[in-house]
Length: 261
Image (cartoon, rainbow, N blue to C red; front, side, top):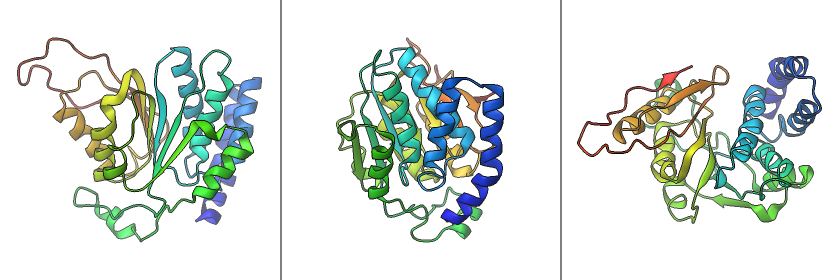
């Protein structure tokens, strides 16, 4: 798996990084490029474009003074979480250092279910995307993100998410692939995301179950005003819309399908 990720990174990942630096030849972009080179491919399978997107999203949440923590569901070896931790660290002179909650079974993905496509079921094997807690700790140490702000929660989402005392979430990063996993994360955590907070979906265009889970949740909860913003051919994100007041009758706030931009 690591050899495959290295091959992909040495190809498209490096090209994406070079294009990013050409478009934004600033000191901050050079630092982000350095960070990405530290975490790929050993510590994350998240694409270069999606890592480039995560870092400024955290900093935008900081600039907006959004309250709450950073939560990642689907950690693998901690690379994308470490990038977000560095974004918090870079703004600590203006904002208090946020806590980072990292949820993963560290046993690999669960089997895909009935709502997931045949391709997912055919591709699945036990231990797929199995992460390593020691590597998570190692990359945080390497980048200098203080571990006192990092909470690593090992176990399946359905039991662990509800049992944790997260009051508010500024950014929720969902990288869990399958319908049931995405749905559980949204059911347990969406209400804790603050208004105008960010929900990042790493697999929205990759696996149909992920997209279906998001659309089902928004429809069931009658959530309006969601605008999906594509990052690359796999990932997307949106800001939690302001709550619409006065939707008291059934169907009054029926949510349409998300708008894609």
